Image 1 (cartoon, rainbow, N blue to C red):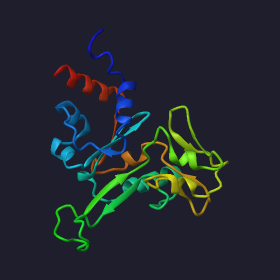
Image 2: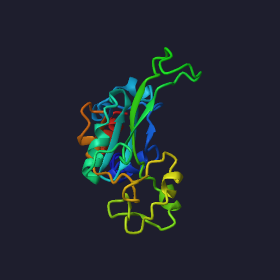
Image 3: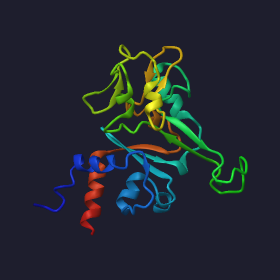
Amino acid sequence: MAKTDFLTADMTRRQFMKISGKSLAGLTLSASMLSLFGCSQKQVDSGAVATWALPQGLLVVNADLCTGCQRCEINCTLTNDGVCSSYISRVKIQRRLNLDGAGNGLLSGNDNCFVYFPDTCRQCEDPACGNACPQKAITTNEQGIRVVDTDKCIGCGACHEACPWHMPTVNPETGKSSKCIACGACVAGCPSGALSIVDWDAVTSAAQAAYMDL
């Protein structure tokens, strides 16, 4: 058996599921993986880079490249809802405007006190949102993505409250909850490259190359 036989796309996805939505800080990535992710080891070490394991590929988020323009939110809602709305967007631009820990105001002199970064659904293996839904309206489709059945959804907001990151959002106009379905509209609308989706075969090939170099 070749020593790379265990590095299948499915195995690679399961490995990234363990750190899905978390910073890669503390990991040393190979040159091939850094190139694939479009980031530097310095950005990884600073905690700027995070990944989400999606069925179709690895969503890579680089906070260093995010300008807070909200085009990801706009593209998301135009694609999925036919409206432009940050509130119901499935991807959320988070803002950290005071990171010095001492509460010294908006711009307190800390280099990291003015940061934007995109945040979205982790597609959890054990979804708190789905477990909390009294109508069992959040199910897993054939691609492994957690989706909301709007015919069952009563808009109670239990999914929003249960999610540690409050990603599902109840649309006040429709009275229905919505969450990320991994459509990729946010990536397509990002002008700075802060969001990208890397195919699993490419991720696996980079992991295999790094393993062979050991």
